[in-house]
Amino acid sequence: MRLAERILTDFNVDVAIIGAGTAGLAAERKARASGARTLLIDPHFSGTTCASVGCMPSKLLIAAGNAAHHASAAGEFGIEAGPFKVNGPKVMQRVRRLRDDFVSGVKKQIADLPDGVTVKAAARFASPTELALDDGRTVAAKAIVIAVGSSPVIPPPFEDLGDAVITNESLFELEDLPASVGVIGAGPLGLELAQALARLGVHVAVFDKGARLAGLEAGEPETSLREALAKELDLHLDVEPEARRNGDGGVTISWRDAGEAKEAHFDKLMVAAGRAPDLDGLGLEQSGLELNEKGGPVFDAGTLQCGASPVFIVGDANGERPILHEASKEGTIAGANAASFPDTKSFERSTRLQIMFTAPNMAKVGADPDKDTVVGKVDFADQGRARAMGVNQGVCEIYAKAQCGALTGATLVGPDAEHLAHLLCWEIENGSKASDLLNKPFYHPTLEEGLKTALKQICKDVGLPKPDSRDDAELPGDFGSD
Image (cartoon, rainbow, N blue to C red; front, side):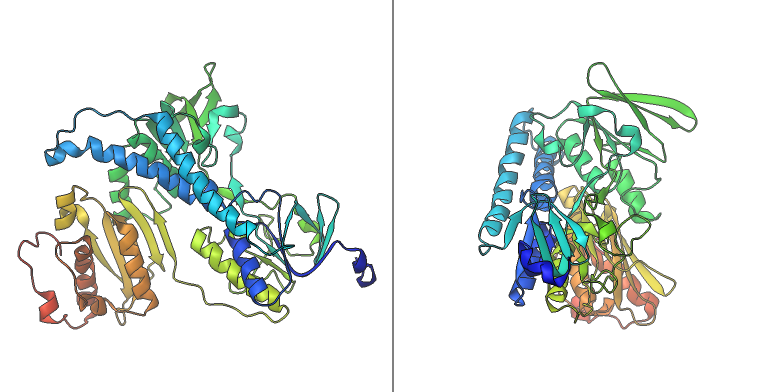
């Protein structure tokens, strides 16, 4: 559209945002706060992925699974609770009730936006700065933010199984818990939901063509995670599963194990093989953007800008860091840069923090180790507080620079590792050394004490001075804590 024709455009704005998820909402908020005229475009305004089908409903199901697990494990502590029953319909009703409450909170945020900021429609590019809406209206913008989110991937072998296939999005709509579920994918999402279902009495088997869990490298943390989860789940790794629909509406999964043909029947097949950006239908061929081998725009990770264009891409749409707090940060960066375009700047990103909410937890913090890294380890099998709580499983590794002992990252598998990961992430951002942490107070007996073993190992390997004696004193009854 030429400049003279823009008077006929339905919307003339500074920044148009396609998608009202976490990243899109953050981008709109930041751009408007920067003085830009904004337009937030979404075909549904149904709530963020986190609130509707991701973080929150999955944690609700995990909480139910943990409640059942604690009841079944009470005998270890001398508690005779008697038989208990998992009421599947009530479990799912609670999940949906609280999920809908979280979603309503997001919808209220959207409803509270200023008049004229939102438009309910699907958008596609007509040019690098123009959008065509599916209701026939058009948008002209100085800058555009792509925040369309992502959807579950269903690999070809499982596309034609009908309603026997569920995903993390459709699982929460089930009226009752199925008796059995086969899970395709041993990544964080698949493992979280698999363990939650197993703890609720569902027979669960997990299949993955990879040889390791949760994307972890080979090593003690991955081994400890596999050993822990294998107590609750049937794990079939390094296999190529196939599936067929049964006459009863269920599925049969077949695979080969050490050359031997095997198969198993399940009521449902949950495909957790990852998510892909929702870029189809955007008309990227009209955007003028350079596309990568996956068909997504090439972009700068610091500015979120696509080449030198006035287009920015954020959150699950770019697939770089598909995590809620990262999506929010990216939206803020893109909103600021879109509002100030062509004057953009690169923003420093926060330390990586990824958590899987299985039991034991798994977390990745900061950078992976390299040749200049020293590694400190702690095995929670013999850690005092973990043993007292009956959750003594998992191995944690902490990484530091060999030259100075400054913390760089961690791979954590262990009880409440979600909290330990936060502590380490904050200390990495502060530039702390292993010795700095050892000079801080450690309450006894706590899980945090377990980190002392790894931190002391780093200090020894790097040659850092011993901690102050008052903080390093051995505590009575500190069995196996460091």
